[in-house]
Amino acid sequence: MDTLDARVAGLTGREVARVVSLGGSHAWKQYRAELADGVPLFVKALPETAAGDEFTGMFQQEALGLDWLGRSLGALVPDVIAWDSHTLVLSWVEERPPTPQAAESFGHRLAAMHLAGADFFGAERDGFIGPLPLDNTPATDWSRFYAEQRLAPYLRRAVDRGALTPVDARTVEKVIDAVEDLAGAPEPPARIHGDLWSGNVLWQADGAVLVDPAAHGGHRETDLAMLALFGLPHLDRARDAYNEAAPLAAGWRERVALHQLHPLLVHVCLFGAAYRTTTMEAARTALRV
Image: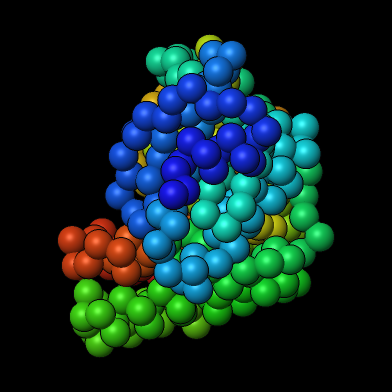
């Protein structure tokens, strides 16, 4: 019978001493694996009985996304050790308490990662945000990419599950129709994490490591807006350092709600009407009404 330690041993080619569950809230679970020589690894795994079609390519996309982000000067990600259809193995990140100095370093390195750029908005492969599919069809215009591939699909899903009302939908549709006017001056594609809430920032003494990306070519304000959504420690220090390294365009504060609307719609799709009020506030703020 297949066991997780056998899967990790097979992928890494090294003997595994033990695997300890860290829990998890999705179909996949998280683990700390310790190799026989004492080296710790982080493991994300689906059970072998999981339906293959729903999550096909998830771990491959995550591994490729981490590798792509890691090839920037920012180098903010863990090492990818191995993966298969049901397992992802990464280097272990030992977290440290966040400090203002670490936040400043993080801001500088995030700017460097973004400035590494991308060839287009989107990615070569479709991806996932949490357990939901993410349309990464390449595009050259960010406003239409954001409207059609980030807002509209999750609005439809939220309405279909009854978490948003038809009246709510009309408000969000106004944002979708007006994105080009709300987006500010065009910027080239940035190399973004794509799901950069504070829980995906693992603090280090000299900065931070980013995990669980939905990596793609996007708008750099998207990552910064999501950092603000759930309260990153020392956010002002990190953002000031970022702005020092890569100054943000005029009016970026007025666009925070626009960039937060996508992750909020994702949360409505995943968790229901508990996020309805915050989502609709963001939509109205984005419209500046």
